[in-house]
Figure: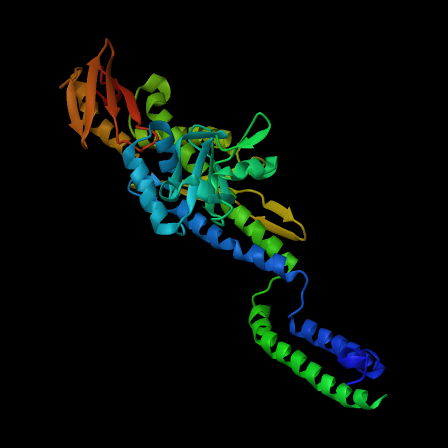
Length: 187
Length: 233
């Protein structure tokens, strides 16, 4: 090997560099044609994947039991907090919602007592992250009932102290965090 | 080109071709699978609109039901013309009244939905259950990005309530009017408790019917004591 060594031999060989660039261009076109390279794909694919929960939620809301539809049960429970309605709701959630989905219910924007349903009790609300889906409907008394669906976030960052690292917008969308005196807190 | 370059160039070219070829094989299979699943921006916008519309339609179904419950709740108390005095075929008379009340209630709920600018034509079917069908007179168009999605937001509501009870109440208790008195103060019809009180000219009845969850309709009606309507004086 000369003083220039292996790398030096390659760099001083213009024919190889020209050939290499030519190969890059050819293969780039082949990759684009077969669809491996597509700058918009990641974004689109992730949007499509999110419909998984929407399917379940629509079926969930269309479900009914002997005590009424899901909307009816949310209404009855928000009025009287009856154990029977709550148990019926939990049964329907277990049947249709994906495992570990945590459900939060707000009436006219205010969280109702015991507003967390489903696996929130088991895992603790602070193990849930940004909301996946939200559905707002008008109830019998013209109140706005909002049902938010959360799924567990990455365990390592879903610690109790996460709220203080979130900005206002994130804070409002993060289960268990609230804005208080201009700061995001889990109180 | 020097002597070593003469050796390296073909060697590196073959190596590069091998690496690119391997990458091509590796991704080609995956790309072929994904290419059938990949959607463009227009399709994603369309899907978003479809889901959004489904939620809106779900909300419409709900408010159509609520209006039905509200109307049933009001119907029994409002009664028919003549201040709640019933004569023959109360069901048909009450159905006309129900249609009017339903329209009012439904419109007030509709104001809270996205379809507030749409007007409806209703069809009522009263067999054993009360079936209400509402057909939108115009389309609802949603736009998102490149996509446009048009629906005709119609609904069908089935309420487990038999309006025939009004006829059956009349059939049974009109004979009490002929007798000009409450034969019993408390009676049972179809499992519902019927109470009867008297005043100078009328027998006043009160029936608390089945619990529909949101409302438990109460039926208040009067039957004339004189029996003039039935050919008796």
